[in-house]
Length: 588
Image 1: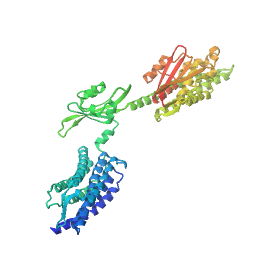
Image 2: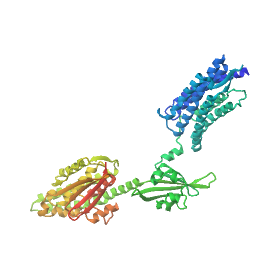
Image 3: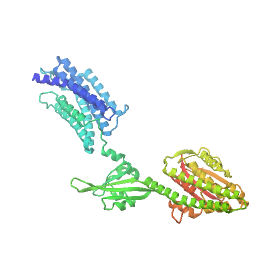
């Protein structure tokens, strides 16, 4: 028996060797959640086992007592790091150095102080038998120490068991090994404390740790514990951008992810247990698709936060191993931006193939007519006709440039930037002036007013100014070149040939103003023209061109497009005296 105890003691001391090896392997993945605490946990096991093993082979009762006392320090280290390992492993994030849980490490030092300074609180009496086994009648502090350790072990096991229940695949295997590796020594220690050891007061917990070490080594090298940390399905579900709602066979909501809670404006507590029909009550489009169907794949739309949103709806049955349908999973993917993108690309095709083609065809016809007249004319002033040809050619170039700008807006980045409104208006006015157009501007300074819009906001403002100039006067020197947003080819053609005089010779005046509220900024552009025809505006309400209804102003498409993609809007109005365009944008 003496030999057996000595062999056990030496074996326990030698547990330091595999512990150091596992610590080294674990530390290679120290950046992974749980790896640091696993390393310290394994070293704690080695410390616990080796100090107890040394107490069995040591010569002298005081040396044995010292080894037993030191063992309690490693006991605390093992139980604390086990709990912290569970926290990091299950939550999948490392604890910060300021985590309140680290205060747990105060206890081992307090316990050591009590054990060494007031030993009677731990042992009311003690002795070492001839085999080297330490026997004691335990005092109150021993049970405080035991309660502290057991609470941490149970808490860690609870975290791991819950993770095991929700895990799949290799994650489930890894967690199961960790649980088994902890349960074995925990049960052995309960037997020791309860006095059920095969030899009185012989603690078999360190011996059980040998099995734990084997299990953990198997997990490290076979299942790459701490190296591969698969993301749990529950975590993926929680972080999905799609709204996911699980409904059981009784049509009750049993699970919702964060995206669904945000979409439907509710809480998990309020949602769980409600009927599916009640949960979707404010969205008839979803209720209509759900019905009794268990397999749905379609697109729907409904009003959400005051705007129409488009969603791809999928409803899939959830079946058990017996192929019985246990419920349904409802998935809603917001495809509003995709729908808008499709519409904008279709619009680009229409603008380029119909609007642009229509205008260029008419303008080229005019150019050809003038050229033919020059060719046939033998008297008169061909220079004037040549000037008309030049102007129409400029119109074609300008319109093509605007179409190219539309393409850049449609295919470019949607990211909005902050603009100083005063600077953006100055840039727009200067852009129109550089084209050789004569006009005056009346506007107050807009100080400290910033808006959030696409980088092309000055382009939209320039088109509105250009529209007001062209629309407010028909004087040749004030004609905006190319495709001012309010006029069609026929209108431009008639104005270009109109005789000058009266109001037509006046330099037009553009009146700009801006107003701000808490959330938006509205830029107002006024001129004294007749306004945009209803037929022109209806095209933009429909969002598409038709053969019988189309807007010939590429610039107008550009203004509306930039406004919408900037999260704003454009409104056209004729208040009787003036033609007014209001551009509303988000305040930055």
